[in-house]
Length: 257
Image (cartoon, rainbow, N blue to C red; front, side, top):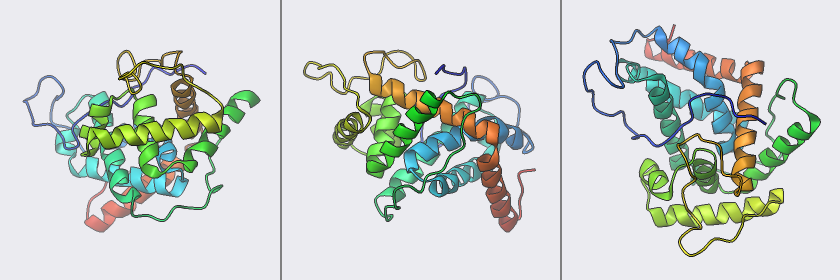
């Protein structure tokens, strides 16, 4: 499966960085109407990431709605960012919020996840993605967050720890456990590495193609892109999330339109 040319999440601060005038990442004062366009351009990708992290469509839609609501409440600031930076802000907010609630929630029953099929996908591709999506719920929520941040988004242990507000040693443990479980479940293995290399950062810029010597990263990234394409073509999930956002904003006396 090929990788689409879209913004991919990297490390950003969990709160928006300070304003620096109308240059660099910030442009002219944003209109709230711009939020609707931003949501339309990014929601399918954001929902695909959340589904893989949460292992549940309902949980994913809830946490994505919360993250976009937070972005809308800070749109005078977030809306000035370049599109890639604004998308990273929402993604980091979503990931950190799920990290906080994951340890307190009751694990949902397996087999609940239902997702659309990507148009023109071969049976082999569909089966491959189904295998990945079926394996991810076997991990603990914290393990999923860490392994996806590392393998799909190319973040180092340090970047993941800083983004989540936890110690790097904890990230290392979750990453090791998640990789070991997933490699067994999906039937891939990684070449042996020397001391200190087990958790080496993926090479290249965040969002760059996963190295071919890490088949698990290749498999997870391919599944992520496939799922984003499927959600974008179907649009049912992003539409439900948008309705939830509108409902919450009406309750607050605002609106995204």
